[in-house]
Length: 302
Image (tube, rainbow, N blue to C red):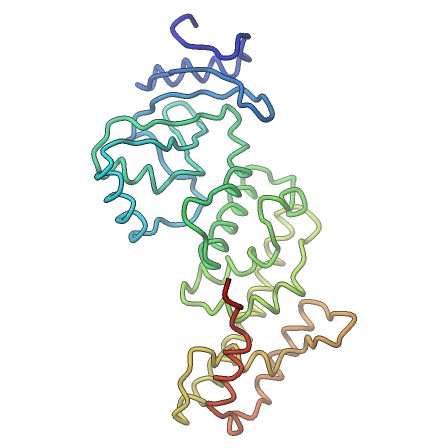
């Protein structure tokens, strides 16, 4: 281990030392083994072959616009100053849960090596996804990331369940929305999110039991969305076209009023919502009402 700088003085755990040796065998270069300053966990700082680094299989997709913008900045600076975070699920493979856009930039710029902080514990990848602020998530990106993580955990940790990963999933409605976005990237998640936030809960039991229940929940939301789509189309045929139409109809058909002290269950909410939309009188909708509601719902300027 003499060829590596160890800071502060101490003997790194066998797991960390073995990973350092693996990095060297895989064509990387270990620069230092160190304890990070907060929890004093051992980590490795080094250079990894860019070709052997890939995104975790459950995180959000790359944003071409973000990659293009960052590539221009890195090219102008002519240096890479922001190491990515990496863990190794197996020899020869390295996953980055935080730094995928930077990884793609270095690949496009044909850099053979990329600077990385390598975490010896692969399971920490799920926690690190929550720190990924390189590009702010929108609702679709976050939901798809969560459902991909969910499926990955269901395979890797079949004896565990949603309540074991509350921190990683952040909110239960991201799981349900992820299932909906998987089948329809154009799903109106933003319109349904206010209702889902109030009635969707983390489910008890193992992933094997909860995934079918999640799919049933997604089916209920999808059925309501199909009825909503027909109502919106009838409103558009009257010449009323406004980007807030779906939100307007949902706001007037939701069974979750502010006055309610107790909320109905998930199934009851979306069954009732579907019936309310089917009974909604689209002939009484006016453009100025939708516009006024959109203005009132807009967030206050910072």
